[in-house]
Image 1 (cartoon, rainbow, N blue to C red):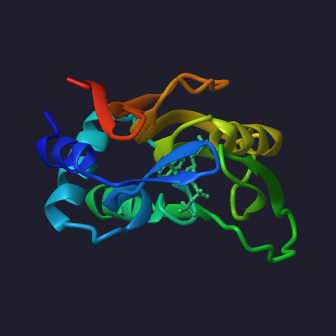
Image 2 (spheres, rainbow, N blue to C red):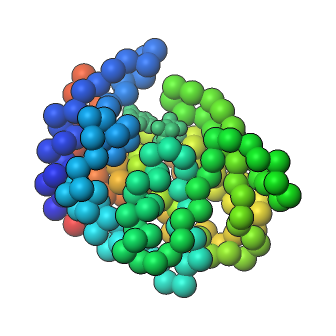
Length: 182
Ligand SMILES: O=P(O)(O)OC[C@H]1O[C@H](OP(=O)(O)OP(=O)(O)O)[C@H](O)[C@@H]1O
Ligand code: HPA
């Protein structure tokens, strides 16, 4: 179903971040490069996966959600709203607490209003820490979260809302593809 994505996953390197097995892949790290054919395969798959009807923003997290959200935006004409790692102190700025398997930090939402219909996309979900933080912040704003989609699900994350993904993987000293969206 996603031949370029699955082939690139099973051949990608793994590095250790403490005890965490971190896979290094074009879509999650931009390394070694982002092949346009891969991006197209992902964008077509995500558009088929997601409910994008009457959506105001495709919301994504800096940094590696940006190429995916941009590709979707070019194909749908829906604007992208990027959750940034930089604070701007603008009126209404909303903090997101981000905890991953290897890092902790803050991100910041600007430009989303109560009632805005949004779809959230990201490159990968692993612990779910990033997306749970984003969901909580968007709910506190009063945004209407219509759908949530990832390119890759790693392991068994826990998320406070339903979501979908293109490919599910397990990572040890290599990447194993567990299942794929049909
Ligand atoms: O489910 P989780 O355990 O939270 O992991 C997923 C998050 O980790 C990465 O972000 P990160 O901020 O590390 O990297 P990036 O700046 O390269 O996108 C990825 O882009 C997701 O947002
Ligand atoms: O193992 C990983 N690789 C790349 N990005 C990630 N974001 C969370 N986990 C990972």
